[in-house]
Image (cartoon, rainbow, N blue to C red):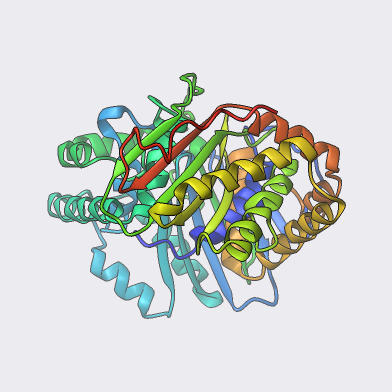
Length: 453
């Protein structure tokens, strides 16, 4: 399903959230002004942020289950559920839901990640009660009509085929399979053609019944709202349902696979490199974000300046970290002409080696801190991004880190902290994934010694 606020959610959870989230822990901070939390008798957590100046409200239901929590034979079931929940309840059809949201100028959408699934609706402020009723109904009482399941099965199969036809997406999927081999974190959230074709209504309904329970759910809302009104609107949500438990997750243990090549007759070679990174409750997480910005996280980064600005080797080049419950990754992506792949890889190696050997400069340190601090604030200007921040943080940590505390932690990162995390990540094994007109033994890809710190 299209993800209107996926980027916002990623910034909110990976910045103000995932960079500061972990398993539920006792609150360590006083409440941030405007943010209120309540736990319903059912066990469902409700967190809101009041924005008096807003003209909208965004409500989200966050479920602590994603693609890494699926059995191999049910790969893609979380994403399948994401599609099906908007197909209706026993009392609501998919069309009636769409008409009702359109009639008030709102939007409704969802997204699935490796560790959670989120459903949200953004509406004019006066439609809060309607939004709460609609969203909790579709999450708690999906109809799972046979015709809807078959229709969405075909939609997802087309989505998988589309993904295969987009080499920049494909190379990232291949890379993840190599960084986390034989582990569900390495799987694409869409699942496979075989798993989607074989999945039965009973399996989908059973997965929903197991994981969509109070202990695994957070209702988050932000905008021009009153907390008590939100609590009243969801008071009966999953009332009387067994609380359930959160998924039990296993840490990846297999070694990284060094090379994965998918031969395609593309005009451009798509290259991705990946290292194992940090989990989202590690003290060095903010230093990792600083290191990433210096490496390839912005227009002033070393990779962007050297590869695009100085050499014209690629139109798109970036690096990005992902932090999970018990592990993480850092990836570098670039696309270039097949004849220039060897040069591109040499440049990436040189840039990474430079970080390992010499660390970052004072200017890079100051720019990275300013970027992370400023982008955090800019990403919190609307009710959707505020909802994503508080929902993701509450789901994964059990508290919302105040903005000023998070900003303090960013500003406290030193150049020594960055060098320590650079050594932890980049001195480890790495994987190279390539999609393009290459074979596994192509000399342009091989013979690259592992970088040691």
